[in-house]
Length: 416
Image (cartoon, rainbow, N blue to C red; front, side, top):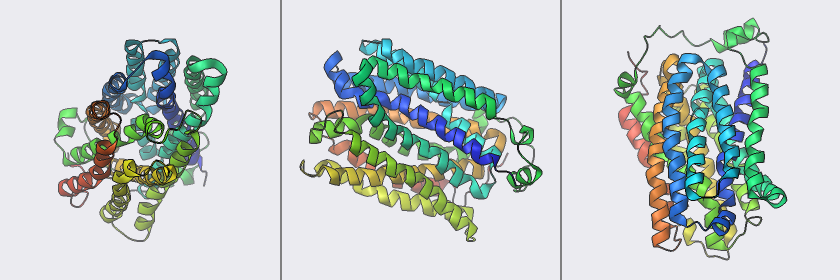
């Protein structure tokens, strides 16, 4: 058997890595930009909100376009546009300018996860999808690891403007490799008959008509995914955009001093994504039902997230205790996300996967907009007290899992 499907996962992994580098640069540079440009928490909150609002639109629109035009073309356009938007940050000097650049970045980056989930649904049978999803989604953590290591060096050498331009340009390198290597499974010259048979081993899906958004929004499978995204995505954005600032405000860590804690957080988190996908895949191979395997993995991850509420209560002399707690929560988030995305390919017809992922991503981004405004205003009003944001981050996953179970007691496939 050939193994081209793992090359596809590697391409998706690197795309997600670059995606997260480009969106996380502003969080790493925030202490520098606060001083250089005179921002406060409310200004930063509006920039995060601009990204989230555009990301919500991009998520939904790109999901529909990817289902129509395929991921080779659709993903190529998304990567080219977001790379240009990332580079454009280096030319901005006002809150409005950064907000426009963040909006352009979010609009284009919205295509990433719908494309990646659709790619996995096309290249993997059901028994390997959660593991493959965890593999590519680990790129989000590798991007978050790479950012605090590389960006301070780039900023020290070429200034904060050069850091934005250099990281944005990397996307064009990936784009050239993608166009060279990617084809659909039945069109790829390196896929042999054995691998194609393995990819298509699940019972064939009956043909389905084109499903408009109104029809998808009437299905509990869509709402289950939407609720999961609304509960988890805003918290992940909080980790990306505010944890560097939390380490600076709470423990006095500067730009270079926070690099190691951030590397630790997101390195372990990447393993959590793979581990969460591996757990449900292992349970499936052991004979568990899809319903039991996915929900058990989601429950385990939710339990590991609960302790994060005590993070801002850690004494200032014990920064590594705070790092350890956030690390556990971030790793559990990634395991949760791997299984949440896999719920879509478990329950939704293949030709509607990107559309449902896009709808759910839009819902998660809209929730993220409101959470960003809440965080910014709470921090401004309380002089950077992070108790409320971390308390919310602790409980949303468990509540979402309860809602998912009530909507889909047995993870029933979507009926048309």
